[in-house]
Length: 135
Image 1 (tube, rainbow, N blue to C red):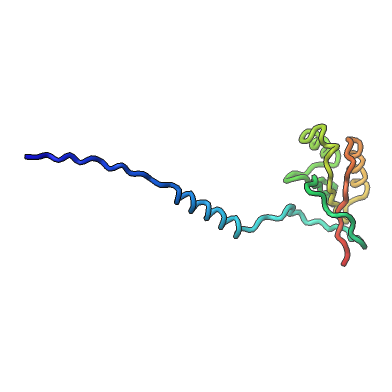
Image 2: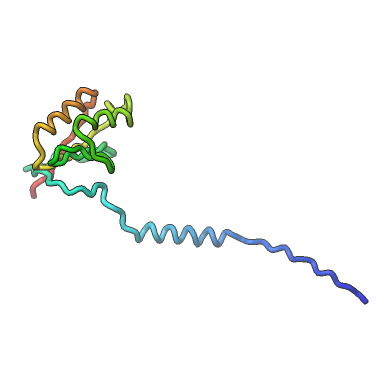
């Protein structure tokens, strides 16, 4: 009696098609998703009669609220604290940063002047104040 031996077949998994499908799904979800706005804090910006220069490519955005707090990223700091936090994050390169300052219309001028003064004392040369241009 003859005994046959069966060899296991070599199975080759071709993952190239799976990678193609994953890339297609990734592109689909990236194109159809909606992204959150840059900042979700509601502030009343003052209005200007004429718009000035355009925004810099990648400014450091600080938001001064009517309560006198400075919002940077997802955190809120006092006017006195923010410069220390910026120095810890950027070190000596803080003086090369361009800062975009969004000030609430109802914020105190004293807080804004103190914040600008603290930034200028640390060597920041470029500070822009954001406003809404009137149509």
